[in-house]
Length: 485
Image (tube, rainbow, N blue to C red):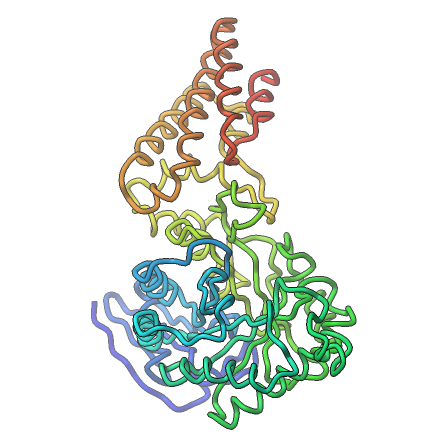
């Protein structure tokens, strides 16, 4: 493969005609046999162009490429054990390869992010963050460090503000130029009498702190960017708190929003337009998929991203997808998210999902792994679960096709027993899946023989299956397969 790179300073590579904006991410690839020509404006667009060539099988012709969304990223913003450093670095490199350009660091259980927000990072922890910041720059990823003081901050205290900016200065001098101020998951009421006397209501305290911090940041470095997560972070976007907050903070402060719900099944352009009208800000979506913390901890979200409008890029700053505590498992849905963010108009969830599985599992075992992963689409997105099984058992499939799929299920069960990191993360779901394989096999045998002893075995296994709390195939699906054929 021969690659020639041309750096240009012209409309051809600097202006995104489709989205009507200047960009340093556009590139043009021309293919002629095994020769590739890249036209771009700089290092960043060349980086994306080379990754694009790697990711895609390109035939002869010209490809004019610019991403759909301006801000494309993920956030480590879940409750649970924060990722290990090696997993963070690996994820950052992979997501950059797929065109994501933003990473928000905000693990709820990093004590120095939330509980111990007043305290500076010890040298060891700060050293790890510096490595992460350096790797982000190398991969053209905007690293945004977040602080969440809302659990116990006294908004009216000058001393508290000094502690806040001292912490931010530590990260600024470590190389951070994007910061997040998070007020999510805190009391909606002010807790100190001094704050109540000065502000009367929480939104006024938040407006004051955001504006004070914004001015301080811009005095420190005019290029610094600030993102705010409001206390009310979901709904119609016309609620009192979010409307007042949005209209009283600077226009270039980004506002996180999750959509209609905390975990939104759909995010529409219509909703985004309403948010803009009421807050004077385009929403920066904090998309709570594939995260599976809190009440969702028995679910494993491996399905593709669905339910986000194809033209949402026109009415939002971008989307930041919240990850699971399980870093390896998060890669599969996040790759589909990256595909959507890069080209939302031509995003095909199933095609993207199969490619994501191949990337994470390896092409050799991808097909058999899909026999397992297809049963882990249970999530807020309300995707249809166990699509392959239902199609086989309710779609007039031949016995040979069912037998072939059962063989793939057992093959995937064997794969899940190895010591790969993703298999370790899936251990609880795998144990339930091993039982599911036996249930499906027995159902197929019963449908062929109508042997009542086999039927009794099925009921016993279903009882054992239901004793495991992790969610997989619903027992009602097993019964439907058993009785409705």
